[in-house]
Amino acid sequence: MSIRRYSHRAGLLAATAVAAGLTVCTGTAFAPLPAASAQPSTTTTPFTTPDTDNCPERDSPPPPIDASEVPTPGETAPAALPIPDPPIGGKQMRGCGLVLPPGAPPLPAEISATAWQLTDLDTGKVLAAKDPHGRYRPASCIKILLAATALPQLNPDTVVTGTQDDANADGTRVGIGPGGRYSNDQLFHALLMASGNDAAHAIATQLGGDEATIGKMNDLAKSLQALDTRAATPSGLDGPGMSTSAYDLSVFFHKALAIPEFAKIVHTEQFDFPGYPADPKNPDDKDHPGFAIANDNRLLYDYDGALGGKTGYTDDARQTFVAGAERNGHRLSITLLKADVLPIRPPEQAARLLDWGFALPAGASVGTLPDAAPSADSADSSVALASPPVAAPGDDATHSESGHDSLRLVLIAGGVILVLVLLLGARQLNRRR
Image (tube, rainbow, N blue to C red; front, side, top):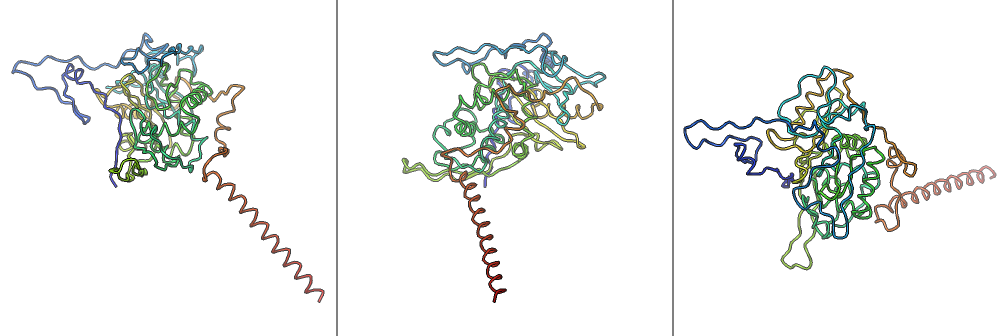
């Protein structure tokens, strides 16, 4: 079976590359352009990490470069989210530039991420960060929040039928087809491994549609005190008011990793995904066979101890990346926002920051992740969301099987009791004789 690897757009602009004296290529290496003559070539400006010391994204992400966030007719763009005071996670999280623990060694070079955060997954301590509460666009990394919202609510064995609306989803698609039969487990693999926006649509449909799903995602974000986050789409496509932060993505990843299904899926390298039948309206169409999908997180293959994570890219968000790793029983996560593939790709930047984090002395910390703080009208997510979903009217046969199993158990138990009563009665009759 062939493997389809659906990665995000590389995000390289040819004009930018040429201006920087680089050629555009599909691999990770970039070679200088040959000199036009024998004269010495002009030196290029050395790479520098984007400066955030003056808090350029304190209130909201920078203006979009396209029309992706234009509100629909009759609607207005939402106002910027309020800035919590004191900052969530501790007073040092107020910093917009580098936030480092005392005595920290020099940071690794060639980190192009505008904002990032390194977090201890076991203790919830923030080890180091850059502009942790700066507001940026999440791209497909918001699918972590979608998964944390939907996984506890949807039965993984429930099977749904693919629709044309699923297949028409904008952006990256795994390959859902109309009439195909997909379990939720398969949809979540497509969502997190191949970043399928068609899978996001199929999942959101089961939660009541895009608007209802966005509301649930934002409610969960608020309950987790991820107050820099506003989801505008379930998939991560840019929309009016969309924002998150390196801090909030760390919160979502920490929450999602506590869900066994999530942890298993993001650690999966390859997965078989079903096909779909031929279009009955098209006599020339044929059945579309299943195929294998590969995880688009390169760190999973290249970094020892990788736990998995999520990639993202849009023209406005640029490269976004979330990942975790374990070394000597110690687990860390790294979140990157508004990064680029120059001078090295986001997974390589993440690997360097993880190596740096694992080398920090014990006790290093500049802040903490918050505990879940649900509002009075919402259940504690650590309890209620972990409860098995209740079967709703209209669910397919997969849900009703649990009721059938209970009935079978009752009948079997009743039969056993009846047999015992008959045997006891027969024994009493024998004694009287």
